[in-house]
Length: 216
Image 1 (tube, rainbow, N blue to C red):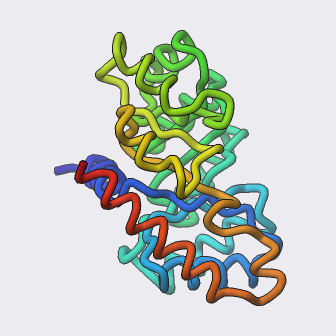
Image 2: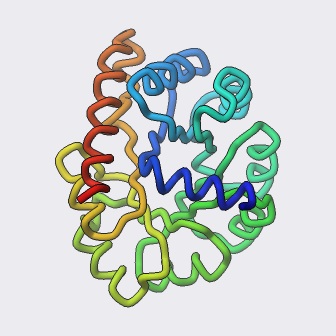
């Protein structure tokens, strides 16, 4: 199995990506430490995080292949290549712009790009994106994933935005292959307050519910 396929299989297996828009390089690394302590191993460091590529390099050096590490909020073609060079296992963008998506696909890494309408979802998948990031999920809800999944069952979808402890089971029941969670699992204010134990606690709760929901 090729490395890209292995990454995709692992993402579908862990089925949870923590999306981090960290307040600083140091605090972001501590946030990841707390998430990993709670059992979260799917980590997306967004480009809106200060020194995001350096954060990824340090995390890659620290954790190696024990975590699935990606870079998100990719909005420029040049970022796709530099994210790969930093050590990212996968790339995530909130949008689908043709040149951007082509640069992401060209890296050979696992890719996710944002789309909302059925037409956008289909076109994004046709461009070679592996998993469609249905964003913002808060605008649609699980019933939307279920509705789109009906005519387009071949397209893997992952909602981001609007994912919480209370609706995780509904997203998976609707057909999502994974979910992305940001402030619900790892809010910046907890890191700024030094409350990393609470981040670990939330991480453990998310992991437990995700695994229970997948088995249903």
